[in-house]
Image (cartoon, rainbow, N blue to C red):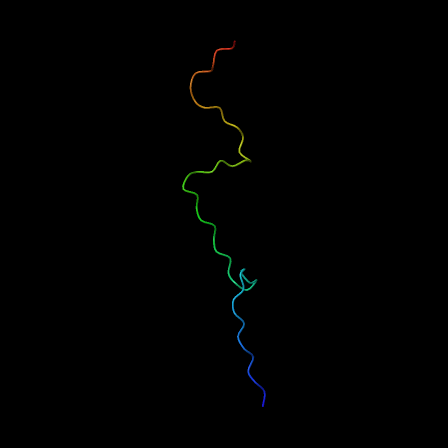
Length: 48
């Protein structure tokens, strides 16, 4: 008579079979490093 396998307790980390939770949205807009640098609107600073 074979004994049923004992269920293993969950490990400290997620297993490959667990779905990856979606990243939480940032509370503020995060600047994209790929975006070109846009100068702030307004008059151009006077050259020294």
